Amino acid sequence: MLKSIGCAWPHLELFKLWNLQFKGRADGLLSRNRFIRHQIPRLLAEDIREVRKQFRRFLQTPEGRARLIQRRYLSDFLDNHAGFGEFKPGSVGAAYIEFMRTESLSAHDLTWHAEHNCKQYHDLDEDLQWFIARQRDIYDLLYVLTGYQRNPIGETALLVFMTGQGTSSVIKYLSILRFFNLRKTCKGNTGLIDVYSEAYQNGQRAAHIIGQDILNLLYEPLDEVRQQLNIQAPVDYYDAIEG
Image (cartoon, rainbow, N blue to C red; front, side, top):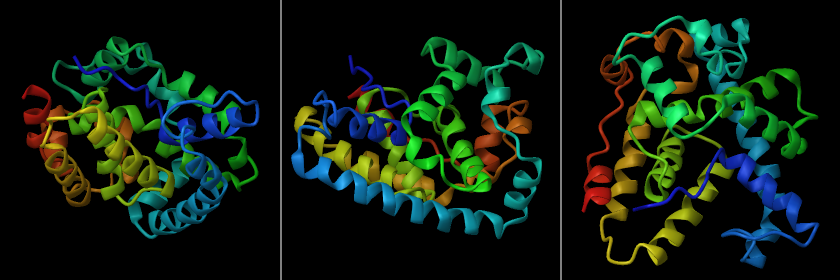
């Protein structure tokens, strides 16, 4: 059975490795490669430039401007399961709560770890910090919306889907690293290229999820939301994990 590699949030993974290397304790895929470790500072600077571009594009849409005016920090709502009321079976919210409980995940835990490890983002202006927080807070919800699972192939497929949505340099970088690592560890699985080609195309074709009214979507039927946002079923992914 495929085991999760614990990708809680791509930026957090990179920051943890960056912080640990100064203590001589870094390990894992990134830290085993000295060249990659030395690229992290450059990558983080590039990532901030890329996020600024995304934020400007976000504000060019009516949905983006509306979300900024509301300025909701989603982690405050997503962990308050009782405060939502009862979700109907088959709704996005019901699927999200089930996913978070099954995986023992918490939106607030992710926020706490991000705030303590991703300190390089603390000097950014408040609007940009809110935008980065929104990207972080919808990360686990994307598993529910896309149908990917928290196993090595699924975690990487979600990063590739996010790349198709026009995401940050960190996510693009980690998706490439994870793809090549999986090609070494998943020998005999010849469908990986198909899985990630499909994930990238699905991300490109889908509506820009970060701009959606996330809290209202939670009450809608999951199948209808996927259709509304044009999120296609990851057929090649299911074939790969079942094969």
